Every structure is written in C-alpha cells, then in structure tokens.
Length: 458
Image (tube, rainbow, N blue to C red; front, side, top):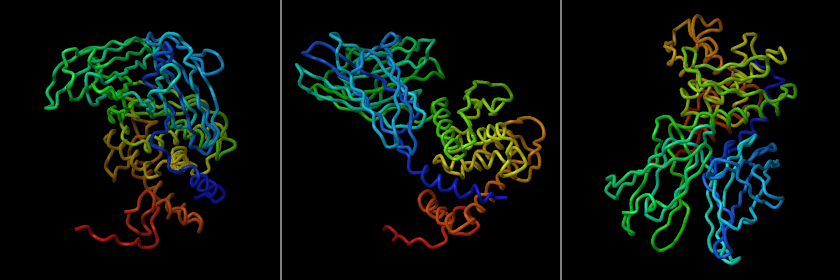
C-alpha cells in the first residue's frame, strides 16, 4: 500500500534532486597531469576549479602524487601541501591555484574524492618572465583499459598509475593514416606514479609531418590506468584534445562509489532518522555467490564487483541495487517496514524511490531484476521459484523476479495516481526522460494528453 504521508515529500525531493546532472560530474576525479614551477624563462602553474551542481553541499579531498608515486607538495597559498580538503556549497565554486614556487619544474597527477558528484577542470598555464603565453584546460577522467587519440611526434601524453601497491606496464601503439601499426613501445609507471612524454620521444623515427593515431593499453589484461593527451605539431601550436578513454567496460569501483554517495545523500536528505553514512565495501569475490550485494548490522553495505559488472552499462540499475541495500540499512537501524512487511519487497520500493530522488531512472529496477533473472537462469516469467542477490541458491522466499518487477510497476502507477501534484510531476518526468512512451494510463509515468505531431522529414 502506498504510504500517503511519505509519498509526496519523496516526490518533491525527487523533483529537486533529479535535476539534470552534468555528465562530467563525478565523485572520483582523476587528473592525469599537473606541472608546477621552473625558471622564470619557462614556468608552469596549475589551477584546479571545482563546481558543485548539487542541491546539497559537497566535501572534496584531493591528493597530489609525484612521478615516483610519493606525495607531491604544492603551494596553493597556505604553504606546501600534498593534500587539500574543502567544502563546496550548493552551486558554489572552489579554485586552487599553485604559486609556481618551485625553482625546478615538477610534474605529477592528482586524485580528488567528493561526497557528491562535482564538476572540475585543471588548467596548466605557461608563463615566460611573468607573462602568460598559453593555457591548456582539461576535465578530470576515470580509469580505463584503453586510451586513444590523434598522433603527431609533438603530441604530449601523460599516464598515471591508480594502483597503490603495484607498478603497471602500458603499451603505446602508433598507427599511420591508413590504420597500419608503425611501432609499439612499452611504458612502465610505478605504484601511484606518473609518466609524461612527447610521442616522438618514444618513436624518434616518426617524420616531423607524421599524422596518425595512437592507442595505450595495459600490458596485463584487466588492469586500468588514467591518461591524457595534448595536441601539438611542428608549428608549435598546443591545444587540448577530447577525452580518449574507452567508454566500455567502465571502472566499476568508481561507478559504485558515485552511486553510493548519491544514494546516501538522498536517504539522509529525505529521512531524518536514517543516520550516519554506512561503510561501503567493494568486494572482488568470484565464487558461486559473486553476483551479490548485501547490507549487515545497519553499518555495512557490500557491493560485489561481479554484480556491478552484470549491470555495467546502466548507472541507474546500479543505483537501484545500492538504494535497495541502503533500504536494508534503514530497516536494520529503525525496524521500520513502511511499504511491505516483506523485507525484500520493502527494500525494492526504497531502491526505486531513492534512486529516483537521487536523479536516476526508476524503470531501472525492473531492468536490474531482469538481468539477475537471466544471470541466474530464472528468466521465465512464469517461474515461481527464483533467486535474489541476497540468496543466490535455493528457493526465494520473497517471490519471483517477475513478481518483484510487477510490484515495482504497480507502485509507480499508484505513486503517479496519488494526487494531482504527483500526476503533474509524472507527466513532467515522462516528457523529459521518456517522451516516446505510449500515452496510455496502463504505462507508468504516462502522459495524459497527446503530444504535438512532428512533420515527417523527407
């Protein structure tokens, strides 16, 4: 049964929190290159800019690493430091600009972790005798298994190692304009270390007017890295290049952390009695129970990498899983079951509502349950027995995936039909995210009036 006293506040919160999040906003922000200092005749300066697009304040902690992997201290105006922590108010901005105080050029990279997705840029400015000559700006990136971009001998490349205990080897391959490989060179980066070079340093035989492409891949399968490239040619012009990392497969820990932070903020904003942030455990389990997630003791949420890999193409499906587990945390802490007396069905509704509140698509819950049914060989819609991600073997005491999907569909229909205000919100939501869904009352989040017809293109 829909809880009328809670439904409307959740929807109003969702209406605010589900504002379009910038695609570049992340909770894990990796800056593959920074440069600072040098003689007055050629001096580099690094500037970080952080913007918080959320309705709540965000806290950011940033660490700086040297080429060797050790701490790199820069002076942002309060003395040399290798770590900075700051809070950004809603829609606020924080700027950290180095003083370029080192007499010798130092290079490295940076990682920043935020409690909510924030936007950021890093700008590298080159000064000569106090006069700015050029500036290159780039967004942070995420780890990837491949990076590729345009190739000239003068193109600058930076690679950083996100692993704290092992060095990584990367292979840089160059292709000519016809797509033929013209050479490959290895690059080794120490733990938490950094390497930067011009492509011509690795491939000195490239002619000055060479134009082609390059690709960076790990020498050992399964490893990831971060990279960045800057364009330059024989003319001396320098410019930024688009992000060249592979879009799939994604870095699962970063995706899990982002969803977890957003969902925790949604719970704490909507439910005053939710309490402190639970501990997040990202587990590499690969046994028969690997496609799994669980909450325990009201204090720990564990998301297994195998489960995240199953839904790696859908952040909203991952958000539903995280929201579901945080629903268990709420149950364990308060003893409340507000939607169903059944533990799993109740957590399903929390996953749907809170993922919606955090700005994700509520339809993803059904997609997640469908993928679990497929992965556990219980995909038949008529199946009466199925497995949950808490119970990956044996009988599911809480009903089949099909039943749970039907529960979510029914809940959305009830929510959208609760009042004029909720109907209006659902219409707005549908027109923004699902404008081509059929306008039928049987379809959740359906538009109740016909949309204007577009003329057919000829």
